[in-house]
Image 1 (cartoon, helix red, strand yellow):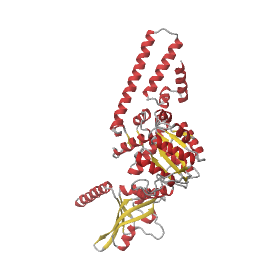
Image 2 (cartoon, rainbow, N blue to C red; image 1 turned 30 degrees about the vertical axis):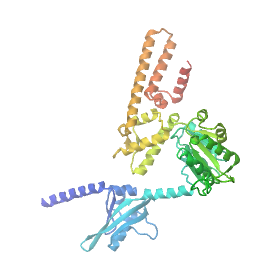
Image 3 (cartoon, rainbow, N blue to C red; image 1 turned 90 degrees about the horizontal axis):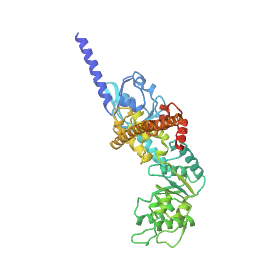
Image 4 (cartoon, helix red, strand yellow; image 1 turned 60 degrees about the vertical axis):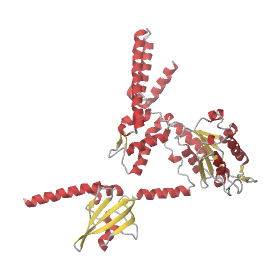
Length: 475
Protein backbone atom coordinates (compact mmCIF):
# COMPACT_ATOMS: atom_id res chain seq x y z
CA UNK A 1 0.00 0.00 0.00
CA UNK A 2 2.77 2.43 0.91
CA UNK A 3 4.55 1.68 -2.36
CA UNK A 4 1.34 2.44 -4.28
CA UNK A 5 0.87 5.74 -2.42
CA UNK A 6 4.49 6.71 -3.09
CA UNK A 7 4.02 5.92 -6.78
CA UNK A 8 0.89 8.11 -6.94
CA UNK A 9 2.69 10.97 -5.18
CA UNK A 10 5.61 10.79 -7.60
CA UNK A 11 3.20 10.73 -10.56
CA UNK A 12 1.30 13.73 -9.17
CA UNK A 13 4.57 15.57 -8.55
CA UNK A 14 5.74 14.95 -12.14
CA UNK A 15 2.40 16.21 -13.49
CA UNK A 16 2.70 19.42 -11.45
CA UNK A 17 6.33 19.78 -12.53
CA UNK A 18 5.42 19.47 -16.23
CA UNK A 19 2.61 22.03 -15.85
CA UNK A 20 5.02 24.51 -14.27
CA UNK A 21 7.57 23.96 -17.06
CA UNK A 22 4.87 24.53 -19.69
CA UNK A 23 3.96 27.91 -18.17
CA UNK A 24 7.41 29.50 -18.16
CA UNK A 25 8.46 31.68 -21.08
CA UNK A 26 11.76 29.94 -21.84
CA UNK A 27 12.30 26.72 -23.70
CA UNK A 28 13.43 23.76 -21.58
CA UNK A 29 14.91 20.61 -23.12
CA UNK A 30 16.38 17.75 -21.04
CA UNK A 31 18.28 14.73 -22.37
CA UNK A 32 19.49 11.67 -20.45
CA UNK A 33 23.03 10.26 -20.43
CA UNK A 34 22.42 8.58 -23.81
CA UNK A 35 21.26 11.76 -25.53
CA UNK A 36 17.60 10.73 -25.45
CA UNK A 37 15.10 13.57 -24.90
CA UNK A 38 13.15 13.09 -21.67
CA UNK A 39 11.69 16.56 -21.02
CA UNK A 40 10.51 19.08 -23.61
CA UNK A 41 8.26 21.95 -22.54
CA UNK A 42 5.57 23.89 -24.45
CA UNK A 43 7.75 26.94 -25.11
CA UNK A 44 10.45 24.76 -26.67
CA UNK A 45 7.89 23.24 -29.06
CA UNK A 46 7.05 26.79 -30.17
CA UNK A 47 10.67 27.87 -30.59
CA UNK A 48 11.59 24.80 -32.63
CA UNK A 49 8.23 24.32 -34.43
CA UNK A 50 8.10 20.75 -33.22
CA UNK A 51 5.58 18.50 -31.50
CA UNK A 52 6.52 16.78 -28.23
CA UNK A 53 5.85 13.37 -29.74
CA UNK A 54 8.44 14.08 -32.44
CA UNK A 55 11.16 14.75 -29.84
CA UNK A 56 10.53 12.85 -26.61
CA UNK A 57 12.06 9.38 -26.44
CA UNK A 58 14.29 10.03 -29.47
CA UNK A 59 18.00 10.69 -29.81
CA UNK A 60 18.75 14.38 -30.17
CA UNK A 61 20.83 13.90 -33.34
CA UNK A 62 18.03 11.92 -34.99
CA UNK A 63 15.74 14.94 -34.73
CA UNK A 64 17.92 18.04 -35.11
CA UNK A 65 20.73 18.85 -37.54
CA UNK A 66 23.67 21.08 -36.72
CA UNK A 67 25.97 22.90 -39.21
CA UNK A 68 29.25 21.18 -40.08
CA UNK A 69 31.86 21.68 -37.40
CA UNK A 70 29.32 22.64 -34.72
CA UNK A 71 28.00 20.50 -31.91
CA UNK A 72 24.83 20.71 -29.88
CA UNK A 73 25.36 22.67 -26.66
CA UNK A 74 23.29 19.99 -24.89
CA UNK A 75 25.70 17.28 -25.99
CA UNK A 76 28.71 19.45 -25.11
CA UNK A 77 27.44 19.88 -21.55
CA UNK A 78 26.68 16.16 -21.36
CA UNK A 79 30.14 15.07 -22.57
CA UNK A 80 32.27 17.76 -20.93
CA UNK A 81 30.36 18.07 -17.67
CA UNK A 82 30.64 21.87 -17.78
CA UNK A 83 27.99 24.60 -17.87
CA UNK A 84 27.72 26.70 -21.05
CA UNK A 85 26.12 30.09 -20.56
CA UNK A 86 24.70 32.65 -22.97
CA UNK A 87 25.74 30.95 -26.21
CA UNK A 88 23.96 31.67 -29.52
CA UNK A 89 23.25 28.51 -31.47
CA UNK A 90 21.80 28.07 -34.97
CA UNK A 91 20.52 24.66 -36.07
CA UNK A 92 17.68 23.02 -38.03
CA UNK A 93 14.63 20.98 -37.05
CA UNK A 94 13.54 17.81 -38.85
CA UNK A 95 11.74 19.87 -41.52
CA UNK A 96 14.85 21.90 -42.31
CA UNK A 97 13.60 25.08 -40.64
CA UNK A 98 16.41 27.28 -39.30
CA UNK A 99 16.27 28.03 -35.56
CA UNK A 100 18.44 30.47 -33.62
CA UNK A 101 18.44 30.51 -29.81
CA UNK A 102 20.42 31.93 -26.92
CA UNK A 103 21.16 28.99 -24.61
CA UNK A 104 22.14 28.35 -21.00
CA UNK A 105 23.08 24.67 -20.78
CA UNK A 106 24.01 22.67 -17.67
CA UNK A 107 25.05 19.06 -16.97
CA UNK A 108 22.79 17.12 -14.60
CA UNK A 109 24.67 15.15 -11.96
CA UNK A 110 23.91 12.49 -9.39
CA UNK A 111 26.87 12.97 -7.10
CA UNK A 112 29.88 12.83 -9.43
CA UNK A 113 28.02 10.90 -12.10
CA UNK A 114 26.59 12.80 -15.11
CA UNK A 115 23.06 11.56 -15.79
CA UNK A 116 21.95 14.07 -18.40
CA UNK A 117 21.86 17.73 -19.45
CA UNK A 118 19.31 20.55 -19.46
CA UNK A 119 19.08 23.48 -21.85
CA UNK A 120 17.18 26.72 -21.19
CA UNK A 121 16.68 28.59 -24.45
CA UNK A 122 15.44 32.03 -25.52
CA UNK A 123 14.26 32.62 -29.09
CA UNK A 124 16.18 35.10 -31.25
CA UNK A 125 15.14 33.65 -34.63
CA UNK A 126 12.79 36.57 -35.31
CA UNK A 127 15.41 39.09 -34.21
CA UNK A 128 17.97 37.53 -36.55
CA UNK A 129 15.48 37.68 -39.41
CA UNK A 130 14.65 41.34 -38.71
CA UNK A 131 18.35 42.25 -38.70
CA UNK A 132 18.81 40.53 -42.07
CA UNK A 133 15.74 42.30 -43.48
CA UNK A 134 17.01 45.68 -42.26
CA UNK A 135 20.40 45.08 -43.85
CA UNK A 136 18.71 44.05 -47.09
CA UNK A 137 16.56 47.19 -46.94
CA UNK A 138 19.66 49.38 -46.67
CA UNK A 139 21.24 47.58 -49.60
CA UNK A 140 18.12 48.33 -51.63
CA UNK A 141 18.39 52.04 -50.92
CA UNK A 142 15.76 52.32 -48.21
CA UNK A 143 12.91 50.46 -49.93
CA UNK A 144 10.99 47.52 -48.54
CA UNK A 145 8.07 47.13 -50.91
CA UNK A 146 7.56 45.70 -54.38
CA UNK A 147 4.39 45.10 -56.39
CA UNK A 148 4.23 41.64 -54.80
CA UNK A 149 3.79 43.39 -51.44
CA UNK A 150 0.46 44.93 -52.50
CA UNK A 151 -2.45 42.98 -51.02
CA UNK A 152 -5.67 42.95 -53.02
CA UNK A 153 -7.61 41.08 -55.69
CA UNK A 154 -10.23 43.72 -56.53
CA UNK A 155 -10.48 44.93 -60.12
CA UNK A 156 -9.57 48.49 -59.14
CA UNK A 157 -6.34 47.39 -57.44
CA UNK A 158 -5.46 45.05 -60.29
CA UNK A 159 -5.83 47.88 -62.84
CA UNK A 160 -3.88 50.26 -60.62
CA UNK A 161 -0.96 47.85 -60.30
CA UNK A 162 -0.87 47.35 -64.07
CA UNK A 163 -0.78 51.13 -64.66
CA UNK A 164 1.94 51.57 -62.03
CA UNK A 165 4.03 48.82 -63.65
CA UNK A 166 3.76 50.61 -66.99
CA UNK A 167 4.87 53.87 -65.34
CA UNK A 168 7.89 52.07 -63.87
CA UNK A 169 9.31 51.58 -67.36
CA UNK A 170 10.00 55.30 -67.85
CA UNK A 171 11.52 58.20 -65.89
CA UNK A 172 8.47 60.49 -66.14
CA UNK A 173 7.19 62.25 -63.04
CA UNK A 174 4.36 60.51 -61.19
CA UNK A 175 1.69 62.01 -58.94
CA UNK A 176 0.06 59.58 -56.49
CA UNK A 177 -3.30 60.72 -55.15
CA UNK A 178 -4.95 59.02 -52.20
CA UNK A 179 -6.39 59.53 -48.75
CA UNK A 180 -4.21 59.06 -45.68
CA UNK A 181 -3.56 55.39 -44.99
CA UNK A 182 -4.32 54.03 -48.47
CA UNK A 183 -0.73 52.87 -49.09
CA UNK A 184 0.68 55.56 -51.37
CA UNK A 185 4.32 54.95 -50.41
CA UNK A 186 3.87 51.24 -51.03
CA UNK A 187 3.08 52.01 -54.67
CA UNK A 188 5.88 54.59 -54.87
CA UNK A 189 8.52 52.16 -53.61
CA UNK A 190 7.18 49.44 -55.92
CA UNK A 191 7.57 51.74 -58.93
CA UNK A 192 11.16 52.52 -57.93
CA UNK A 193 11.98 48.85 -57.37
CA UNK A 194 10.55 47.88 -60.77
CA UNK A 195 12.37 50.66 -62.61
CA UNK A 196 15.83 50.88 -64.15
CA UNK A 197 16.75 53.04 -61.13
CA UNK A 198 16.21 50.24 -58.60
CA UNK A 199 19.91 50.00 -57.72
CA UNK A 200 20.20 53.78 -57.25
CA UNK A 201 19.10 55.76 -54.15
CA UNK A 202 15.48 56.06 -53.07
CA UNK A 203 14.98 59.17 -50.91
CA UNK A 204 11.65 59.87 -49.20
CA UNK A 205 10.60 63.14 -47.57
CA UNK A 206 7.28 64.21 -46.06
CA UNK A 207 6.97 67.89 -46.94
CA UNK A 208 4.67 68.56 -43.97
CA UNK A 209 7.15 67.17 -41.45
CA UNK A 210 9.56 70.14 -41.42
CA UNK A 211 9.16 73.91 -40.93
CA UNK A 212 9.17 76.09 -44.06
CA UNK A 213 12.53 77.60 -43.12
CA UNK A 214 14.24 74.21 -43.16
CA UNK A 215 12.60 72.37 -46.03
CA UNK A 216 14.18 74.52 -48.78
CA UNK A 217 17.72 73.89 -47.52
CA UNK A 218 16.92 70.21 -47.07
CA UNK A 219 15.66 69.86 -50.65
CA UNK A 220 18.20 71.98 -52.52
CA UNK A 221 21.21 72.01 -50.18
CA UNK A 222 23.19 74.93 -48.73
CA UNK A 223 26.49 76.72 -49.43
CA UNK A 224 28.90 78.04 -46.83
CA UNK A 225 28.00 81.60 -45.86
CA UNK A 226 24.43 81.47 -47.17
CA UNK A 227 23.30 82.31 -43.62
CA UNK A 228 24.82 82.20 -40.16
CA UNK A 229 26.14 78.72 -39.50
CA UNK A 230 25.52 77.49 -43.05
CA UNK A 231 27.90 74.82 -44.36
CA UNK A 232 28.40 73.06 -47.66
CA UNK A 233 25.67 70.43 -47.63
CA UNK A 234 24.05 68.44 -50.42
CA UNK A 235 20.26 68.51 -50.53
CA UNK A 236 17.88 65.63 -51.17
CA UNK A 237 17.99 66.18 -54.92
CA UNK A 238 21.74 65.62 -54.96
CA UNK A 239 21.49 62.67 -52.57
CA UNK A 240 18.95 61.01 -54.88
CA UNK A 241 21.14 61.47 -57.98
CA UNK A 242 20.42 58.71 -60.48
CA UNK A 243 17.53 57.42 -58.38
CA UNK A 244 14.10 58.48 -57.13
CA UNK A 245 13.03 61.33 -54.86
CA UNK A 246 9.61 60.87 -53.26
CA UNK A 247 7.94 64.05 -51.98
CA UNK A 248 4.89 63.25 -49.85
CA UNK A 249 2.19 65.85 -49.09
CA UNK A 250 3.56 68.10 -51.82
CA UNK A 251 0.71 70.57 -51.22
CA UNK A 252 2.27 71.41 -47.82
CA UNK A 253 5.04 73.36 -49.57
CA UNK A 254 4.56 77.12 -49.85
CA UNK A 255 3.66 78.43 -53.32
CA UNK A 256 7.05 80.20 -53.75
CA UNK A 257 8.85 76.95 -52.91
CA UNK A 258 6.59 75.08 -55.32
CA UNK A 259 7.68 77.56 -58.01
CA UNK A 260 11.33 76.78 -57.27
CA UNK A 261 10.58 73.05 -57.42
CA UNK A 262 8.84 73.53 -60.79
CA UNK A 263 11.89 75.32 -62.16
CA UNK A 264 14.15 72.47 -61.00
CA UNK A 265 11.93 69.94 -62.75
CA UNK A 266 11.81 71.92 -65.98
CA UNK A 267 15.50 72.82 -66.08
CA UNK A 268 16.69 69.48 -64.62
CA UNK A 269 19.05 71.43 -62.40
CA UNK A 270 19.11 72.83 -58.86
CA UNK A 271 20.95 75.62 -57.10
CA UNK A 272 21.97 75.36 -53.46
CA UNK A 273 20.89 78.17 -51.15
CA UNK A 274 23.55 80.89 -51.26
CA UNK A 275 25.30 79.39 -54.30
CA UNK A 276 25.76 81.06 -57.69
CA UNK A 277 25.99 78.02 -59.93
CA UNK A 278 23.44 75.48 -61.08
CA UNK A 279 24.01 71.74 -60.68
CA UNK A 280 22.50 69.35 -63.20
CA UNK A 281 20.45 66.50 -61.80
CA UNK A 282 19.21 63.13 -62.96
CA UNK A 283 16.43 62.36 -60.52
CA UNK A 284 12.97 60.93 -61.00
CA UNK A 285 10.36 62.80 -58.95
CA UNK A 286 7.35 61.00 -57.52
CA UNK A 287 5.00 63.19 -55.49
CA UNK A 288 1.94 62.37 -53.42
CA UNK A 289 -1.07 64.31 -52.21
CA UNK A 290 -3.79 63.19 -49.79
CA UNK A 291 -6.65 65.24 -51.25
CA UNK A 292 -8.18 65.99 -54.63
CA UNK A 293 -5.51 67.97 -56.53
CA UNK A 294 -8.17 70.08 -58.29
CA UNK A 295 -9.53 71.16 -54.90
CA UNK A 296 -5.97 71.85 -53.71
CA UNK A 297 -5.49 74.12 -56.73
CA UNK A 298 -8.80 75.90 -56.04
CA UNK A 299 -7.77 76.42 -52.42
CA UNK A 300 -4.38 77.80 -53.55
CA UNK A 301 -2.49 74.94 -51.91
CA UNK A 302 -1.07 73.61 -55.16
CA UNK A 303 0.20 75.47 -58.22
CA UNK A 304 -1.65 74.48 -61.38
CA UNK A 305 1.55 74.44 -63.46
CA UNK A 306 3.31 72.23 -60.91
CA UNK A 307 0.33 69.86 -60.93
CA UNK A 308 0.54 69.48 -64.71
CA UNK A 309 4.31 68.96 -64.51
CA UNK A 310 4.11 66.35 -61.77
CA UNK A 311 1.00 64.61 -63.06
CA UNK A 312 2.49 63.26 -66.28
CA UNK A 313 1.28 59.98 -64.80
CA UNK A 314 -1.38 60.25 -62.11
CA UNK A 315 -2.32 57.25 -59.99
CA UNK A 316 -5.46 57.41 -57.86
CA UNK A 317 -5.26 55.02 -54.88
CA UNK A 318 -8.83 54.02 -53.90
CA UNK A 319 -9.93 54.28 -50.27
CA UNK A 320 -10.62 50.99 -48.52
CA UNK A 321 -14.40 51.59 -48.56
CA UNK A 322 -14.24 51.38 -52.39
CA UNK A 323 -12.44 48.02 -52.39
CA UNK A 324 -14.27 46.15 -49.63
CA UNK A 325 -13.69 42.79 -51.31
CA UNK A 326 -10.01 43.15 -50.34
CA UNK A 327 -10.79 43.46 -46.61
CA UNK A 328 -10.74 39.69 -45.82
CA UNK A 329 -7.40 39.33 -47.64
CA UNK A 330 -5.89 42.33 -45.83
CA UNK A 331 -7.27 41.09 -42.52
CA UNK A 332 -5.56 37.73 -42.88
CA UNK A 333 -2.32 39.41 -44.00
CA UNK A 334 -2.17 41.61 -40.90
CA UNK A 335 -3.11 38.72 -38.59
CA UNK A 336 -0.17 36.71 -39.95
CA UNK A 337 2.12 39.73 -39.58
CA UNK A 338 1.29 40.18 -35.90
CA UNK A 339 1.28 36.42 -35.27
CA UNK A 340 4.97 36.45 -36.15
CA UNK A 341 5.68 39.65 -34.24
CA UNK A 342 3.76 38.70 -31.07
CA UNK A 343 4.43 34.93 -31.26
CA UNK A 344 0.70 34.23 -31.35
CA UNK A 345 -1.45 31.75 -33.25
CA UNK A 346 -4.55 33.71 -34.26
CA UNK A 347 -6.36 32.09 -37.19
CA UNK A 348 -8.95 34.71 -38.14
CA UNK A 349 -11.92 36.83 -37.08
CA UNK A 350 -15.43 35.83 -36.07
CA UNK A 351 -18.37 36.18 -38.45
CA UNK A 352 -19.67 39.18 -36.48
CA UNK A 353 -16.31 40.97 -36.63
CA UNK A 354 -16.02 40.20 -40.35
CA UNK A 355 -19.47 41.73 -40.89
CA UNK A 356 -18.39 44.88 -39.06
CA UNK A 357 -15.16 45.12 -41.06
CA UNK A 358 -17.09 44.80 -44.34
CA UNK A 359 -19.71 47.39 -43.33
CA UNK A 360 -17.43 49.98 -41.70
CA UNK A 361 -16.31 52.99 -43.80
CA UNK A 362 -12.64 52.93 -42.63
CA UNK A 363 -11.83 56.68 -42.67
CA UNK A 364 -8.22 55.77 -41.85
CA UNK A 365 -8.20 53.20 -44.66
CA UNK A 366 -5.76 50.24 -44.70
CA UNK A 367 -3.63 51.79 -41.95
CA UNK A 368 -6.68 51.94 -39.66
CA UNK A 369 -7.53 48.29 -40.40
CA UNK A 370 -3.95 47.32 -39.53
CA UNK A 371 -4.08 49.24 -36.24
CA UNK A 372 -7.47 47.75 -35.33
CA UNK A 373 -6.12 44.21 -35.82
CA UNK A 374 -2.95 45.01 -33.88
CA UNK A 375 -5.05 46.49 -31.05
CA UNK A 376 -7.39 43.49 -30.98
CA UNK A 377 -4.51 41.00 -30.83
CA UNK A 378 -3.03 42.94 -27.91
CA UNK A 379 -6.26 42.26 -25.97
CA UNK A 380 -6.28 38.53 -26.67
CA UNK A 381 -5.05 35.84 -24.29
CA UNK A 382 -5.01 32.26 -25.58
CA UNK A 383 -7.88 32.73 -28.05
CA UNK A 384 -7.35 31.99 -31.73
CA UNK A 385 -10.25 34.05 -33.14
CA UNK A 386 -10.73 37.83 -32.91
CA UNK A 387 -14.15 38.39 -31.31
CA UNK A 388 -16.20 41.62 -30.98
CA UNK A 389 -15.02 42.20 -27.39
CA UNK A 390 -11.41 42.28 -28.65
CA UNK A 391 -12.10 45.34 -30.81
CA UNK A 392 -10.71 48.66 -29.55
CA UNK A 393 -13.40 50.52 -27.58
CA UNK A 394 -13.89 53.19 -30.25
CA UNK A 395 -14.59 50.61 -32.95
CA UNK A 396 -16.73 48.49 -30.62
CA UNK A 397 -18.98 51.53 -30.06
CA UNK A 398 -19.00 52.21 -33.80
CA UNK A 399 -19.95 48.58 -34.50
CA UNK A 400 -22.97 48.84 -32.18
CA UNK A 401 -24.01 52.14 -33.78
CA UNK A 402 -23.79 50.65 -37.28
CA UNK A 403 -25.88 47.64 -36.26
CA UNK A 404 -28.54 49.81 -34.61
CA UNK A 405 -28.71 52.13 -37.61
CA UNK A 406 -28.91 49.18 -40.01
CA UNK A 407 -31.74 47.50 -38.08
CA UNK A 408 -33.61 50.80 -37.76
CA UNK A 409 -33.29 51.44 -41.49
CA UNK A 410 -34.48 47.94 -42.34
CA UNK A 411 -37.49 48.27 -40.00
CA UNK A 412 -38.32 51.68 -41.47
CA UNK A 413 -38.20 50.34 -45.04
CA UNK A 414 -40.44 47.43 -44.11
CA UNK A 415 -42.96 49.69 -42.39
CA UNK A 416 -42.89 52.13 -45.30
CA UNK A 417 -43.61 49.34 -47.77
CA UNK A 418 -46.55 48.03 -45.74
CA UNK A 419 -48.07 51.51 -45.45
CA UNK A 420 -47.66 52.24 -49.17
CA UNK A 421 -49.10 48.84 -50.10
CA UNK A 422 -52.17 49.42 -47.96
CA UNK A 423 -52.63 53.02 -49.17
CA UNK A 424 -51.99 52.78 -52.92
CA UNK A 425 -53.83 50.82 -55.55
CA UNK A 426 -51.59 49.52 -58.35
CA UNK A 427 -51.35 46.60 -60.77
CA UNK A 428 -49.89 43.36 -59.43
CA UNK A 429 -46.69 43.77 -61.45
CA UNK A 430 -46.06 47.22 -59.94
CA UNK A 431 -46.78 45.93 -56.42
CA UNK A 432 -44.31 43.07 -56.92
CA UNK A 433 -41.62 45.50 -58.07
CA UNK A 434 -42.28 47.67 -55.00
CA UNK A 435 -41.96 44.65 -52.75
CA UNK A 436 -38.79 43.49 -54.53
CA UNK A 437 -37.21 46.93 -54.13
CA UNK A 438 -38.06 47.24 -50.44
CA UNK A 439 -37.03 43.68 -49.61
CA UNK A 440 -33.70 43.89 -51.46
CA UNK A 441 -32.87 47.20 -49.76
CA UNK A 442 -33.79 45.72 -46.39
CA UNK A 443 -31.53 42.68 -46.86
CA UNK A 444 -28.62 44.76 -48.22
CA UNK A 445 -29.00 47.12 -45.24
CA UNK A 446 -29.07 44.18 -42.87
CA UNK A 447 -25.66 43.10 -44.22
CA UNK A 448 -24.22 46.63 -44.05
CA UNK A 449 -23.96 46.91 -47.83
CA UNK A 450 -22.11 43.61 -48.35
CA UNK A 451 -23.60 42.41 -51.64
CA UNK A 452 -22.05 38.93 -51.48
CA UNK A 453 -23.72 38.11 -48.16
CA UNK A 454 -26.98 39.80 -49.15
CA UNK A 455 -27.07 37.77 -52.38
CA UNK A 456 -26.48 34.57 -50.41
CA UNK A 457 -29.46 35.29 -48.13
CA UNK A 458 -31.62 36.18 -51.13
CA UNK A 459 -30.62 32.95 -52.86
CA UNK A 460 -29.29 34.66 -55.99
CA UNK A 461 -25.84 35.36 -57.44
CA UNK A 462 -23.95 38.56 -56.64
CA UNK A 463 -24.10 39.55 -60.32
CA UNK A 464 -27.88 39.05 -60.33
CA UNK A 465 -28.22 41.22 -57.24
CA UNK A 466 -26.12 43.97 -58.85
CA UNK A 467 -28.31 43.79 -61.96
CA UNK A 468 -31.49 44.06 -59.91
CA UNK A 469 -30.15 47.02 -57.94
CA UNK A 470 -29.24 48.85 -61.16
CA UNK A 471 -32.65 48.08 -62.67
CA UNK A 472 -34.52 49.24 -59.57
CA UNK A 473 -32.40 52.41 -59.45
CA UNK A 474 -33.47 53.28 -63.01
CA UNK A 475 -37.19 53.01 -62.20
